Image (cartoon, rainbow, N blue to C red; front, top):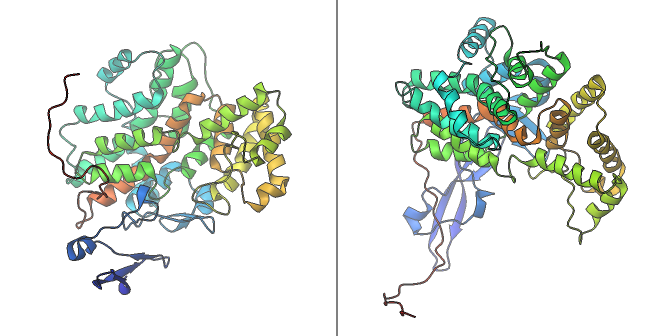
Length: 430
């Protein structure tokens, strides 16, 4: 809903009436789209922290109240009752699928899990110690070269098949990158397994030993993927939308999201948690010492995995995943000093008034890092797991953008702060 609600007045007495847009959850935004054309002035909002870049129907996030909803459904209800593929369908197509439609969707995903045999040869071109995210982004981009007959973003049929392929092939590409790093043979996907079980099998099975997927691990990983599936207009999602606005094909747009997620300030938070735990362990494992350092403003130590830039109260995803984390650790009975430190750190912080008053509660990255480590996923694969979970959100956001008839190519403005006009002079020879 649009209504006039703001008036901007300049020192020269020039003024402009600015319309406001009211979202379905009563969010209020001032529309400055015509500001430059009518006044020659732009707004400045570095890093776009207070700028709405899209009107979207996909995800509602209220950080002050700790609310996260996909297409109107509370994350708590989806985590309790749904699964990752059903949530993926919901995000991408707007509604929960009927039983028959979901069976077809599952079947279509299963039939596209294999990657072209020639793609396997590309893995040989990567050094053994290549980061899995470099392989993931490269392989996703390369897919556009194998499906040149169906990459037109303006063609609905092409969009749907590209979405299916990316959802289906991302776990295969990710698992192969891990196998490459440890020198084990690639494991083909199995059509008899569900989405998450199939990924775990490709990750951890070897030809010489039978591998049985643990139901508790499968459930925990499925839950983590649901919790990461979308998170409104974050850095990687905004990147996907910006690249998609040029009408780049689906694979190019999604690969850009992978690369944005790779940055340690975005997708590396759960990896930072493990690195923090290693630092504490190397120091002797004294949790109280590091709790004290976290309170000391002069210390360089940061308590990773606590608090959240968006959630000012608590991270609703952390509340959900904590129970699953406890179940995984109890079921697997792992003797890992880092996991012991994590539990002590969690207990100490939850009882400490300093953290309680500042609402620095463990977030989803704290628990996800612990779960990934417990089930044997190496630290360098953590961001890949994040990307696998975020895939349906990226695809939904890309699809929504492409199907918006009023969408334009993204083109941010800037305030120039360089030299004013100056004349060219040949530089001195010395």
